[in-house]
Amino acid sequence: MSDTTTVPEPAPSDAPGDAVLSVRDLRVWYGTDRGAAKAVNGVSFDIHPGETLGLVGESGCGKTTLGRGLLGLLPRGAYVDGDVTFKGSRMPALGSKEHAALRGRELGMIFQEPMTRLDPLMRISGHFSEALKAHHPDMSDADIKHASLEVLRALGIPPTRFRSYPHEFSGGMRQRLTIALALVLRPAFIVADEPTTALDVLVEAQIIRILAEIRREFDTSLLLITHNLGIVAEACDRVAVMYAGRIVEIGNARAVFRDPQHPYTQELLRSTISLQTTGLNFIPGAPPDLIDPPAGCLFHPRCPHAMAVCGTQSPVPLDVPPNQRVECWLHGPDDAIPEGGRARLEREELSLADEA
Ligand SMILES: Nc1ncnc2c1ncn2[C@@H]1O[C@H](COP(=O)(O)OP(=O)(O)OP(=O)(O)O)[C@@H](O)[C@H]1O
Ligand code: NI
Image 1 (cartoon, protein in one colour):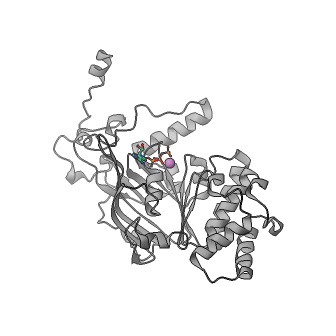
Image 2: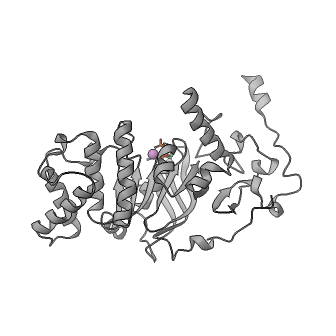
Image 3: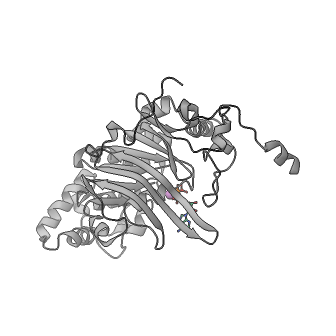
């Protein structure tokens, strides 16, 4: 296709200089009895100051692993590799002591279940005091109160609630509290992993609005993990679509929704629209085994457009103007596709059906 071009990595717009966080070729593998589960397998992207990047994809594709990996919150024994640049310097090895020191102060996390993050026996004031003192041991009580009330106010929680206990709050208010706790240290980067999944739709909308506002007010960059494409459309500047441990498409959220370039993104959008209209939501076939993934493009066994090359060679990341990046042979590069590679992929579906 003539409107696509090969670009050297990293693309100029992705130069680490502009980004608060640059991730290059990140891998996170889990050891299992059968071998390594490649939950994140060569992921590269940038987040710019104050930007919200949505991260979407089917269950099990590696979203949480990616988010937790960046914060060094992986289970023991996970294998991590790759280069991460944070605020212009190389980030300490993910999961190391130095990295843990950054967490909380410079890196924050908002989880799905706020109650599991709050101590039911501790007043809100105690939570703030603990969070702040962990990084600023000499901070006075007056300063702690001042800093805490400032974020509480920004999140619409009245100062009169400062001495309350977590159970005195509704689910939505509790999630506001955990956001406030993540923000009080003014981190440059926050991962929010399905922050509204446990909430009802109205409260969800409020929280998303709050997230969109606070990143402006606090100049925080946000990686927002969600299954909800509506949330991405409303709250995210860019979106990354993950499939089987890779980002298969990334770009401006509006552009990706209006004109998805990867067949997987197209299927994901189609299945979402179908959920809204028919209540049915699925993409035919199943995601691949992360321990023994298929050769070539990971999506080729499910792809309605698969070509011969897709079954044998991994696609090359390509920039599609104006600002999408996609890993899909349909976009080329032409000179990397072998003779006959564009032929329709012969599949074994029929023989499988015969056996069944
Ligand atoms: N501790 C672990 N040990 C082995 N495999 C794991 C571990 N944690 C996760 N996995 C596997 O890694 C893959 C990615 O999981 P992850 O939770 O990151 O996906 P996800 O995209 O966040 O899914 P969901 O949308 O359901 O939250 C899955 O196949 C999962 O089974
Ligand atoms: Ni997850």
